Amino acid sequence: MWFTKNKRQNDRRLLMKKILAINHEFVARSYILFPTLLFAFSIIAHANIITFVWPFILLHR
Image 1: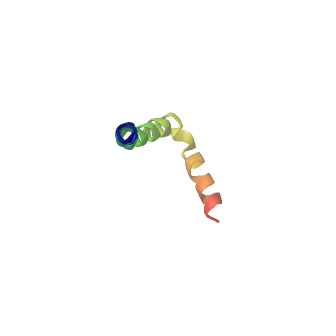
Image 2: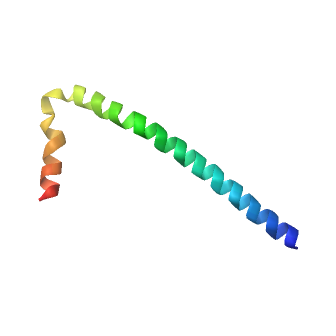
Image 3: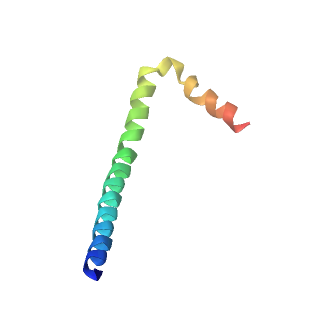
């Protein structure tokens, strides 16, 4: 009985490690991707850059 309980805890730890590794990888990628996507979008909407700004102005009031 103790063996199966111990094994289950081990499996849970391994699963958590895998999830954390995947999450870390995703965060690392999004740090690289987010500025490039924002830059690309600002190029597409270069005439309407103010559209980026006014929601933030309204939210900060």
